[in-house]
Image (cartoon, rainbow over all chains, first blue to last red; front, side):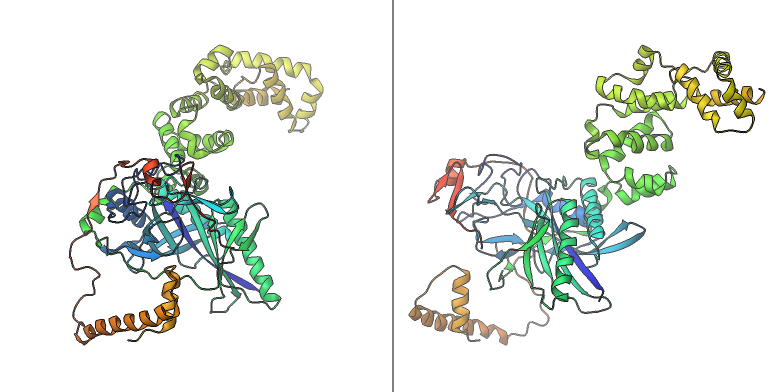
Length: 476
Length: 96
């Protein structure tokens, strides 16, 4: 029997605010335990939460950028559970009236495109961090993260493969980074993903029983966890077993998912409207102002790059996959107005020396200097081979392309008579090859070009070499 | 609406409260009375009234996104029965 996986994702994204969602404590990552807490985060009696203006703005922006409808009235609800990661005994979240609903994202996979619908985006507070490993009998609680603003982005179960899941999260992450509401750092947990996975016989309408895999924190793990879970469920069904509705975790070392073995009783969160917070009312004008303030989004940029700059869809896709990268590209264009040349260089040469394209802003070679190197090749001062040799030196020494060309005397030889003399010498030194060429063995041209480049240390203008070489060999 | 003994026990468990049998009896009857009393409200016709969760028609107040660390780590921990190296220490809570 053939099976069909059905996958829905819940992505938690930490909003880039300075202070927490309901208190003035800092959200900075990696500080001393419990140094960033206020009586509100601690759930002290008598304190009241006050909603962070910026968190609202960021969440609305995220909704707009993912094609959601923004609710003019939404509200906070208490999700009640008893666990020391939130000392209040409940998490402030949104339940029946979320801020954003009915969004969608278009994703591109190998050979096809697909729309993934977004059910909702709601605001909530993060929980604190518990450390269990240091003691047999005790857990250690750090509440610095408790109250950090999150948005939870819930997709419809429109995803069918691990590849689609990864593309969806990549796209979502890219958008959130473009609009500056989340840094997308998965290692530090600013973006993490829960996957709801079930399988059903192909053609079956009814959904299978789902398992939820919690807190997956890298693209590779999303792919591996989903692939493993799909296989596991199919094997269970084929063996006549039932898939249990449960929460599972992904063990990245073993590459398997395992049950969290929660207690039998289902969670009973007893959601109800938080009486400490009034409804969140936003006007059409407020929403529109934020809509207008949104920067160009990845899809719009991709369209501009293909239509106005005439780049291929593939190249434009690579350049727009990271905002810092597309910013770098566009800055280069200010100095050298040749999108194709700049794009080719960035994709083929620059990206291969870069570990993280998001850090291109800190790259040693600034757009102005990068453009200068390409300009030197474009106007024939140096050839492409020399450019590739100069580039690593620009990175290591920080010198400009001009300076290196000058110091090493790498300027391209464009003097026709000088090149012609060299070519004549080489043809004379290789009479047999010249003979064979004239008898029709045309691939020997490459041999001659190689010899000439060796002789001129790669500095001869290849175009001129080809012209003269063909002329001289032909007349031989 | 009557409340069952099971509801009371379940609610107590969720709130991590422990009651004797007599207490459960007593609370079942008391909570039932309260719910019956509230039930009277159902006599009112509210079809034309918009459901609300708050009496006020204003939006929740907003604060500027500014950091103001009002207490120290020591103050944060001072009511904790147990603490160590800046952490709250609680009985091991991992579910297994």
